[in-house]
Amino acid sequence: MVPMTGLKLKNTSRRVLAALFDMDGVLVDSISLHMESWNEVFTNMGLPPFTHEEYFSVLGHTNKDMLSAYSKYNHVRFSSYQIKNILTRKEVVFREKIMHQSSTTPGVDDWLTFFIQNHIFCSVASSANMVNIVFILHTLKISEYFSSVISGTYFPAGKPDPCIFLSAAASLGISAKDCLVIEDAPAGIQAAKSANMICCAIATSFPKNELAEADIVLESLDEINPDMLFE
Image (spheres, one colour):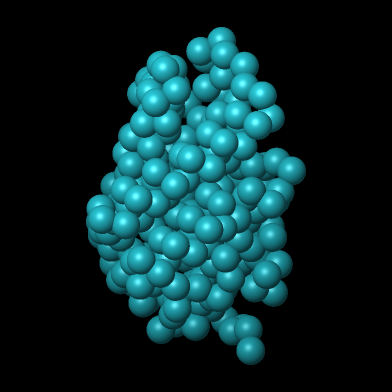
């Protein structure tokens, strides 16, 4: 049964019945591994790597959108076959890396436990493909916390389009206005605000000043105990 009261965000009239988590940079410390994986694939093809500026300009978008941006930055064109091969190979390399180097970001376990103890539904809403999401949740041993898992690769538009968060809310049977999104990227914050959801941003991938559109901005989830934000 859906809780009727949920948690109230202190100093506001907003209540929270569900928490929607982005994955990379939020649940798992994986941003650098993704960039390394992209660049390993490009280097093996004799292509230049993603620069730091290029990579972070599209961080939070789907892999397909990131590859499209890379093509424009580096003035290269890929055939449909090459696109499919690059995207597949990049994820294989990434899973090989994260199998041995993955860990939850600081504070995640405490926040997940807090939400479950307070009968708040949790969902993963990530631009990653479903294979990666499931692989990481099981590797980190946190899959049991989530009532639904949504992959942005199934939607015609990725973040900052709000469809992934709206779908996550619908999968839980919760109104968008009663959802809290936890994000680390400007594109995700824009998607959450477009969906009329509360957004908590953590500065794991971008500095705080680039996350200012969020309702709450933290260095990481272990900066504050969640019971200090909610009642």
